[in-house]
Image (cartoon, rainbow, N blue to C red; front, top):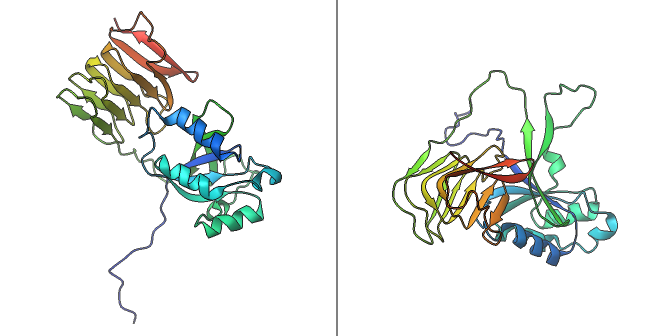
Length: 263
């Protein structure tokens, strides 16, 4: 009789993955557009595993592809390259040498005969650069659920003291409530909503993991930057006069930031 194993278990693990869709092999352009999109929100990603999707490139353009450079670039922006997606054997082989297996080998086969298929992969928009070289998406695996179980949500984080320049607060998995001033140079971030019951003069990033329903509320809007699910606006563009210095809410409507005064 074999002895009972007590030191480890082997289980399936469902992970949300970021899909980095490369639309150009030009590494310089990729760097420029990523910096344009994420320079003001360097903590937008925080170590999420990523798939480098190269299916948008034709065979000719892949010959100039610097896959190692792309891997290094994503790591610099706090993404963790985990695999690639490609139809070209030479790229798949290169990925293996870089420790990036081809993702299709790990995904369930899809059938199209039944629209109620219980194992399918869906793509949802996550963030998109202003140019044409980069598109970032989140991959969500949908599996059969026998019993509906409510998702666990982290408790709301409550901050009672003013935030000074250089301070950074992140409510991972939940909402953030701040009862004091957020000074210029400070940054507040939440996966859910952000409520600031005081002047908001720093940076506020709600829906940090792609929740397009997240909102920002403040009793005095004077922010350097506001962002919801990757769509942001900086102080380079003046805030609307009817909300500047006023109680306001900010939300997404058709991929555009809407700022409304609160009565």
